[in-house]
View 1 (cartoon, rainbow over the protein chains, first blue to last red):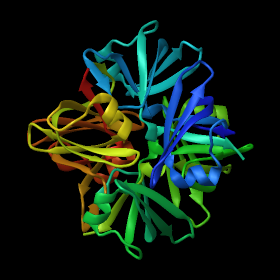
View 2: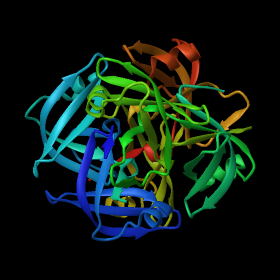
View 3: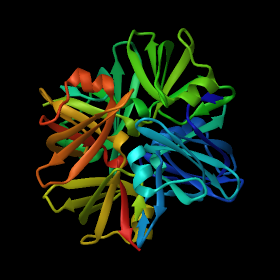
Length: 142
Length: 142
Length: 142
C-alpha cells in the first residue's frame, strides 16, 4: 500500500466496541502502545474487522497535536504517545516535528512555526503526540 | 456561500442513518459517486436534513489522504474517490495534489513534499482521494 | 499545559449528552459563545467530565474553515464563531487567518493562499470560523 499519510502503525486489533453508527477499534502496537480508532460501524462490518486481525493505523501529520508539558491537565484525546523529539524541520509557516516512541516507532506531526517557538520545541526534548480516535484510518488485508 | 474549504461537492441526500448522538448522511454526486458525512444528530434535526435535499459537502484539503496503490489492503475511510492527478503544486514543505474524478469533479489534497516524493506522485497518475466521514461538513439551503 | 494547538478556549461544561460510544460536551466561554466537542464516552468517564467543570477546548488551526458569506446556506458544523479578521499572514502555499470574536477571544485558522484570494480575505472583514465538534479536544484539571 502506498499512501500519503505520514504515520503508519502496524498492529493487531485487541478490542472492538460497537455503537449504533460508530465503532471504536483498539490496535495494539509491537512496542506495547495502543492506538484507538473511531470508524463507522459499517466499515467494521464491510472490512471484517475483528479481534486478532493485523491492521495498519494511518494518521495524517496535521491531525497531531504536540504537548510538551501537561501541567495539571489531562487530555480527552484517546491517543497520547510519549517519546523524544528527533528532528524539527522548519518551513516558512509550518514545521514538522518527528518524535520517536520508546518502542522505536516514529511519529511525524505538522505544527505552526509559532507553536515551535512558543513551546521551545527542539531535538532531544520529551514530548507527547496527541490525536483523536476520529483522526485514525484503518487499513486491513483485503 | 463563500468558504475557504477547497473541496465543495454538490449533491443530493440519498440516505440517512440516525444514531444516539451522531448520524450518517449519504450524498449522491452528479457523477455517480457517493460522499458519506458524519454529523451530529442535532445538526440533522436543526438543519432539516432529509432524503432528496440538495446539499453541498465541504472537505478541507489537509483532511484528504492520497493512495496511489492499495496493494493488498482495504481502507476503513468511507470516502474513496478515484481519479487522475491533474496537477502537483509544490511548496517548501507541503504540496497540493489536484485529482479529477471520472465525473469531472476535482479534488484538492494537501500532503507533505516527502509524501509526494515517496509515492512519486505526478500529473497523469491514477490516484484515490481518501477521507473519513467525520471530515465532511454539510451546507444546506436555509 | 504547553500544547501546539493554536486555539485554546477556556470555559465551563454547560451540557453533556452521552451516546453508546461517543458523547457531546458543551463548553460555555466567558464571551457567551458555546463550543461543542465530540469525544468518546470513555473519555468522559475517565476524565470525570461533568457539568460545571472548568475545561480548555483545544482546536488545531488546519481544522478550521473560514466562511466569509453564508449566502442562502446553513452549515452542519456545530461550531460557528463570528468575528472580525485581525490579520492575514501569507506563506508560500498556506496562510494563517486570525479572527477576533466579540468577546475578545482570538481564533487562528490555516487555509490555502488560493482560498484567501478567492474569498478576498483581508483585515477588518467580518468572517466566521467554522469547525466540527469532532475537531475539538478537551483538557481538564487532573
